[in-house]
Image (tube, rainbow, N blue to C red; front, side, top):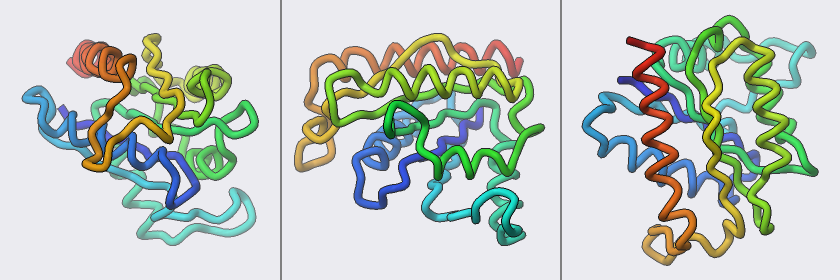
Length: 178
Protein backbone atom coordinates (compact mmCIF):
# COMPACT_ATOMS: atom_id res chain seq x y z
CA UNK A 1 0.00 0.00 0.00
CA UNK A 2 1.05 3.57 -0.68
CA UNK A 3 0.99 6.11 2.16
CA UNK A 4 1.37 9.86 1.85
CA UNK A 5 2.56 11.69 4.95
CA UNK A 6 1.95 15.43 5.16
CA UNK A 7 4.26 17.27 7.53
CA UNK A 8 2.05 20.16 8.58
CA UNK A 9 4.29 22.22 10.83
CA UNK A 10 5.16 25.62 9.37
CA UNK A 11 8.34 26.00 11.44
CA UNK A 12 11.30 24.62 9.55
CA UNK A 13 13.26 24.00 12.74
CA UNK A 14 10.24 22.78 14.72
CA UNK A 15 9.65 19.40 16.28
CA UNK A 16 6.76 18.36 14.03
CA UNK A 17 9.14 17.44 11.15
CA UNK A 18 11.07 15.19 13.55
CA UNK A 19 7.90 13.28 14.45
CA UNK A 20 6.79 13.09 10.80
CA UNK A 21 10.22 11.83 9.68
CA UNK A 22 10.25 9.20 12.42
CA UNK A 23 6.77 7.98 11.44
CA UNK A 24 7.82 7.89 7.76
CA UNK A 25 10.85 5.78 8.67
CA UNK A 26 8.72 3.33 10.66
CA UNK A 27 6.22 3.01 7.81
CA UNK A 28 8.98 2.49 5.23
CA UNK A 29 10.16 -0.47 7.29
CA UNK A 30 6.68 -2.01 7.41
CA UNK A 31 6.26 -4.90 4.93
CA UNK A 32 2.63 -3.87 4.25
CA UNK A 33 3.78 -0.49 2.91
CA UNK A 34 5.22 -0.39 -0.60
CA UNK A 35 5.77 3.37 -0.81
CA UNK A 36 5.84 6.41 1.46
CA UNK A 37 5.49 9.88 -0.07
CA UNK A 38 6.59 12.66 2.27
CA UNK A 39 5.09 16.10 1.67
CA UNK A 40 6.41 19.01 3.73
CA UNK A 41 4.24 22.13 3.55
CA UNK A 42 7.41 24.23 3.85
CA UNK A 43 8.74 22.79 0.61
CA UNK A 44 5.61 23.76 -1.29
CA UNK A 45 4.86 27.11 0.38
CA UNK A 46 1.60 27.66 -1.49
CA UNK A 47 0.37 31.28 -1.61
CA UNK A 48 -2.63 32.35 0.43
CA UNK A 49 -5.58 30.51 -1.09
CA UNK A 50 -7.51 32.69 -3.52
CA UNK A 51 -4.90 35.44 -3.85
CA UNK A 52 -2.75 33.94 -6.60
CA UNK A 53 -2.04 30.62 -8.26
CA UNK A 54 0.60 28.29 -6.88
CA UNK A 55 3.41 26.96 -9.04
CA UNK A 56 1.80 24.49 -11.47
CA UNK A 57 4.49 21.83 -10.93
CA UNK A 58 4.14 22.06 -7.14
CA UNK A 59 0.37 21.84 -7.40
CA UNK A 60 0.54 18.78 -9.65
CA UNK A 61 3.22 17.09 -7.53
CA UNK A 62 1.17 17.51 -4.34
CA UNK A 63 -2.03 16.42 -6.10
CA UNK A 64 -0.34 13.31 -7.53
CA UNK A 65 0.89 12.29 -4.06
CA UNK A 66 -2.64 12.64 -2.68
CA UNK A 67 -4.31 10.79 -5.54
CA UNK A 68 -1.82 7.92 -5.67
CA UNK A 69 -2.00 7.33 -1.91
CA UNK A 70 -4.05 4.52 -0.48
CA UNK A 71 -4.02 6.49 2.79
CA UNK A 72 -2.99 9.94 4.00
CA UNK A 73 -1.40 10.61 7.37
CA UNK A 74 -1.06 14.22 8.53
CA UNK A 75 1.36 15.18 11.31
CA UNK A 76 0.47 18.60 12.66
CA UNK A 77 1.20 20.87 15.58
CA UNK A 78 -1.43 22.69 17.58
CA UNK A 79 -1.41 26.47 17.14
CA UNK A 80 -3.70 28.39 19.47
CA UNK A 81 -5.99 25.39 19.81
CA UNK A 82 -6.35 24.87 16.08
CA UNK A 83 -4.74 23.53 12.93
CA UNK A 84 -1.91 25.82 11.77
CA UNK A 85 -3.06 28.29 9.13
CA UNK A 86 -0.23 27.34 6.77
CA UNK A 87 -1.35 23.70 6.78
CA UNK A 88 -5.02 24.56 6.31
CA UNK A 89 -4.07 26.91 3.46
CA UNK A 90 -2.07 24.15 1.75
CA UNK A 91 -4.84 21.58 2.12
CA UNK A 92 -7.45 24.01 0.79
CA UNK A 93 -5.92 23.87 -2.69
CA UNK A 94 -7.35 20.36 -2.95
CA UNK A 95 -10.76 18.86 -2.25
CA UNK A 96 -11.81 15.94 -4.45
CA UNK A 97 -8.43 14.31 -3.73
CA UNK A 98 -9.58 13.54 -0.16
CA UNK A 99 -12.96 11.97 -0.99
CA UNK A 100 -13.33 8.49 0.51
CA UNK A 101 -9.61 8.45 1.28
CA UNK A 102 -8.53 6.89 4.61
CA UNK A 103 -6.91 9.65 6.63
CA UNK A 104 -5.24 9.85 10.02
CA UNK A 105 -3.82 12.67 12.11
CA UNK A 106 -0.98 12.77 14.60
CA UNK A 107 -0.98 15.94 16.67
CA UNK A 108 2.11 17.43 18.27
CA UNK A 109 2.40 19.85 21.17
CA UNK A 110 5.10 21.24 23.39
CA UNK A 111 2.61 21.09 26.26
CA UNK A 112 1.04 18.23 28.21
CA UNK A 113 -2.17 17.76 26.18
CA UNK A 114 -0.66 16.63 22.88
CA UNK A 115 -2.63 18.95 20.62
CA UNK A 116 -6.07 17.53 21.40
CA UNK A 117 -7.83 20.73 20.30
CA UNK A 118 -6.07 20.67 16.93
CA UNK A 119 -7.07 17.02 16.56
CA UNK A 120 -10.73 17.85 17.12
CA UNK A 121 -10.46 20.73 14.64
CA UNK A 122 -8.78 18.49 12.06
CA UNK A 123 -11.25 15.62 12.53
CA UNK A 124 -14.10 17.98 11.69
CA UNK A 125 -12.22 19.10 8.57
CA UNK A 126 -11.59 15.49 7.47
CA UNK A 127 -15.32 14.80 7.71
CA UNK A 128 -16.09 18.01 5.79
CA UNK A 129 -13.91 17.02 2.82
CA UNK A 130 -15.34 13.50 2.69
CA UNK A 131 -12.29 11.60 3.91
CA UNK A 132 -12.60 8.47 6.04
CA UNK A 133 -10.98 9.55 9.31
CA UNK A 134 -9.24 7.15 11.65
CA UNK A 135 -10.88 7.31 15.07
CA UNK A 136 -7.72 6.26 16.92
CA UNK A 137 -5.66 9.14 18.37
CA UNK A 138 -1.92 9.68 18.61
CA UNK A 139 -1.26 12.77 20.70
CA UNK A 140 2.41 13.69 21.10
CA UNK A 141 2.91 15.71 24.29
CA UNK A 142 6.07 17.51 25.41
CA UNK A 143 7.54 16.95 21.97
CA UNK A 144 10.68 18.95 22.74
CA UNK A 145 11.98 16.12 24.92
CA UNK A 146 10.66 13.19 22.86
CA UNK A 147 13.81 12.28 20.91
CA UNK A 148 17.36 11.57 22.02
CA UNK A 149 20.44 12.82 20.16
CA UNK A 150 20.12 9.89 17.70
CA UNK A 151 16.53 10.75 16.80
CA UNK A 152 15.04 7.84 18.73
CA UNK A 153 11.93 8.45 20.83
CA UNK A 154 12.50 8.12 24.57
CA UNK A 155 9.05 8.81 25.96
CA UNK A 156 7.24 5.74 27.37
CA UNK A 157 3.71 6.66 26.28
CA UNK A 158 4.72 7.54 22.74
CA UNK A 159 6.70 4.31 22.35
CA UNK A 160 3.74 2.35 23.70
CA UNK A 161 1.10 4.13 21.57
CA UNK A 162 2.59 4.79 18.12
CA UNK A 163 2.81 1.10 17.04
CA UNK A 164 -0.87 0.54 17.87
CA UNK A 165 -1.85 3.79 16.15
CA UNK A 166 0.02 2.85 12.96
CA UNK A 167 -1.45 -0.66 13.08
CA UNK A 168 -4.96 0.83 13.26
CA UNK A 169 -4.16 3.26 10.45
CA UNK A 170 -2.84 0.53 8.15
CA UNK A 171 -5.85 -1.65 8.99
CA UNK A 172 -8.21 1.18 7.94
CA UNK A 173 -6.25 1.82 4.75
CA UNK A 174 -6.31 -1.88 3.89
CA UNK A 175 -10.07 -2.16 4.51
CA UNK A 176 -10.97 0.93 2.49
CA UNK A 177 -8.57 0.40 -0.41
CA UNK A 178 -9.29 -3.33 -0.79
